[in-house]
Image 1 (tube, helix red, strand yellow):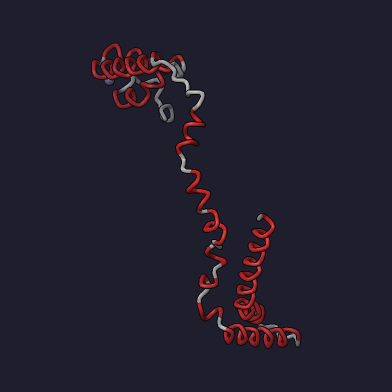
Image 2 (image 1 turned 90 degrees about the vertical axis):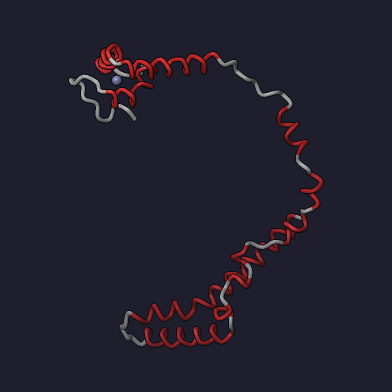
Length: 171
Ligand SMILES: [Zn+2]
């Protein structure tokens, strides 16, 4: 907004005048700033015109009557919504599962039994090596990565079951 890079001792130029005019009209400028505007406006017909235009606009806005929202506004909006149609779709909404809980959300190879078994095997071997004191930094990575497909599939199943349970409790 205006006021970031004002130059208090210099006369106002038109560019600065244009940027700060609204604040000048609002009366939010400090005294010296306001005086600079006043002096510039007295001499510059361009800015004077812009000033008058803005002032006219502000006056017009202030003179607009306040419109009250009708008391029955909410009722009218609610009545215009086809509530019966909304209710009829209830079963459809109920059976829907968030997309990340759909089995198809996971790539087929992650869901594949073989992937999960091989992953398990890798994790088991890595865990055994780690327990024997092999210090390779790769082992924790192998354990986590190996277990990942199984964990993800299981979490997804848990999520789906939790959702079903909640829904059964609600109905
Ligand atoms: Zn000017």
